[in-house]
Image 1 (cartoon, rainbow, N blue to C red):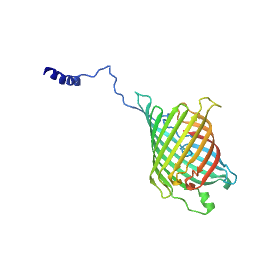
Image 2: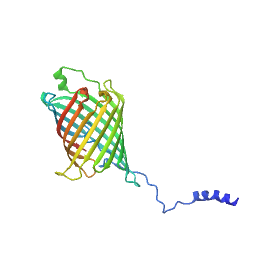
Image 3: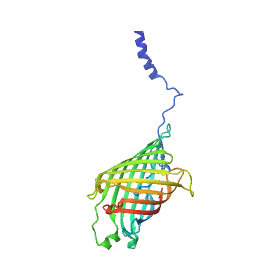
Image 4: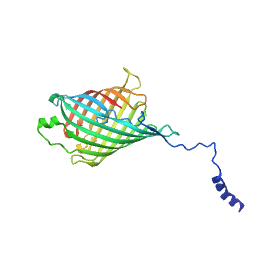
Length: 281
């Protein structure tokens, strides 16, 4: 009987005891606003990542198109970074992004063919070399004024897409990265279908070359609205990246084969080579 009473009394006594001053205190996550660090970097070879870039494209085959300039004016910026003070491998980050993708036809007196506008709010969580991104974004597509005037048409596709995407990035080594992403349109226009898949691979050299490091990247993407045909984009060049790992600048050469990236012309197919520069801020 006495033994049973003692067994019941010990936990009650322990609950009333003062905490051990030597025990480590629970520490909440640390918040950093507008951090320079980015835990989920934009995909290097994806033509539709928010960045500031320009490239000149040439058709691979003569007579299959004209020289064009593809521009992107935009950026992805980290708003807040949460860090686990007990584990430096665990972090979370909220971003804002915006970009406009425009194309100018040099064979038609620099007429603008069209422009796609995008903005979104990615949220990323990283543990070790694996980062997961939950991404809500909006895209709307427009024809260029000069294009409509030259062709005397107002036949613009009503293309807009509000998509929820889930991405996973694996930093296998400091120089090798693989990623995959799926997306589903939660509110779309009549010219838009729901569903998108994307995978890619990036290799960034460790030895400096001309002040930067060489890189090579491959991106494969497909969407339901193009009957799940795959688009291939391969880039190589020199990368100059800040020590914080967020911003960077690139000189690049590109090979692209797939559907037109301007969504007003998504039914057309492109087969191009390009030279350009790109900056992520």
